[in-house]
Image (cartoon, rainbow, N blue to C red):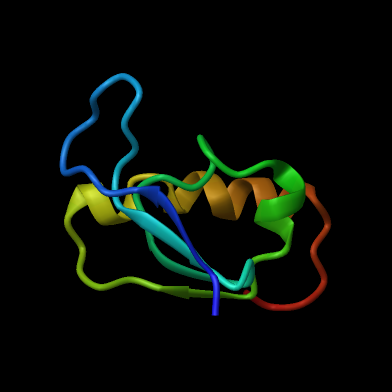
Length: 78
């Protein structure tokens, strides 16, 4: 299992990402930092998203990810 830390901070600070982890390049654990860290190709490879709770630092880039995936013409459900 490979866990990539996309960010682990509770507030937006230059050079530090909000909470987000990418597991085995396919599963997101929280979506605070996603679109600002992952390439569009990496975003398109996400198959599952797990949100631990609805604080902004855990969900901030969720809408941007959904928008990007629509433009990437993804056929499989997320």
